[in-house]
Image (cartoon, rainbow, N blue to C red; front, top):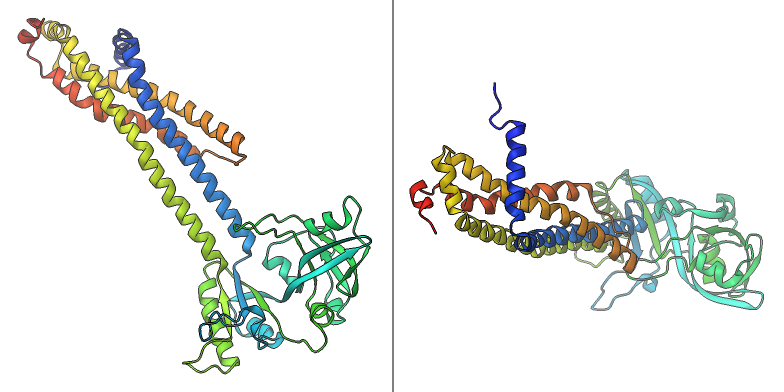
Length: 414
């Protein structure tokens, strides 16, 4: 079967189109510029939106591995928020019951937290402490930079050992190796047995590295005072991301049962979902990206209108040429394809230059603002196709109008 448009015919069509476009270089350049700006703006917006989504996803990963966070104290009792330290009903038995009776919970760590003054030689720094078990490291996806975590035996013995974060280490020890050093926390002496890998800031700007870890039993007895047996939080990790919501329901029912809370009474605990804030940020980032793409697409619409305007002018200027071609045997279909091809060439050139502009703008933005901007491959693949589509859409009417000209009337045109 013979091809409808042989390669030689398409090549000739392309050459003729380039010649026709080259007759009015400035007009053609301005038309291409409209498409270039539109495609470049869309690519840049997609790159920035993709970077924002990746940043939010990274923040979501920092929060923890399928985190289920049980916090002591109701959110609101009689109009007053009691907070973490407002109640003493959250116990180690509760934590163990959650791990034992809720199959959707994979791991668990008790937590006792607060702030304390840490001193080493002539330096001191107030930092956040977390009394935990080693399972906390897996739940929060935190790694060690050096040393080791405390053992179950050290937890049972309420050992005086700590693992320090990057900010605390830098402010207390500087360039000195902290491992094996003795620090004073409040009035107690502790040995540094490990250092934490940097975690960075949270989405709200809180420095997560300004902290130190110790056994929760040590935090209860040596920082809080003797006789303290309750917990501030129970951090759990669900078996999967899909299991988080049903796990929360099961944990809530179990805690209400264990604390003998009546159906009409307020909880003396609450289950926090910090990931919901980050997920909302991700959704907002996607929505904003779509909005900006819509705004950037307006320039594509303007560029398309420019192509239509230029092609209509070209048809008017070349009316006698069209009439002559029709008179010597050219078909209306060939005329239509010729002008449609010229419109597609204009839009394709704009698309190519738009890709270059979008990539350059994204790289410049990344260098200037320090954002790790990445351009999705699909955006680079779709841009040329979108540009060609604009050429076909806005070039169809001028091409159709050229093909409908009457040869005799066209030859009489001045």
